[in-house]
Image (tube, rainbow, N blue to C red; front, side, top):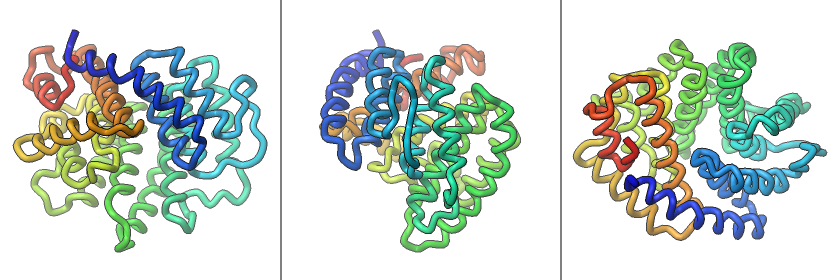
Length: 316
């Protein structure tokens, strides 16, 4: 059994145990923390545990897990969390959860991207990105109808964030990470290429090392789910068969040391966020490597796969 499989096996039960404690607390961070556990269980094919955490998240969102009935309005942050539920929902629940999300989009007086609070505007944008990831895989007509407006509205929001001197790069980077993954879910080469270039222009315009993975490691703070963002971006790059970006995005020298230190600090954390981020990041890399090998982008013993292995993913 590989090193990563051993890590995942040892972390999953602890992640679920922590999720139960978080659900019982029902505080402001419960949904966010549970959502990381939800994605981890889904990506690791722990269906029973995935359904358990999904039900708990829906309860916290005011949704009946059996009937998908919901009364009242969703906030932007709730829609963001609902989007995480949606992208890993099974076939039985998927359409009911999508209908809940569509009800959010249809709410009257929903400020969306124009919300005066940047946190709400970003939450809305991330929510729509999740909806487009779902649509790119299951309802391609919806993706095609919405992606152009979403990217345009996201560009306006990113411009506002970049002008605000109090704003760090975290929200901007995560907007690009999510939108890149939405484009990759549809294999949309035009939107993917546009977003990749904008990402580089906005985040690292003066850098010669402006490859996606390296930019995330260099510009996203460790405690802003950097390993998750890095793993998700590498998955997008692999889904798009972007070999040049893949080869140049793996950390080297100082960046590699930063990543290794990040793995260690995550393992030492007791919080569900730290433990689940590590497990989620590994599980995403597992799927990314599997997609790479199935697509024959490179052979199993190629330098690219060896580079993935060097970053901490030992599935290949």
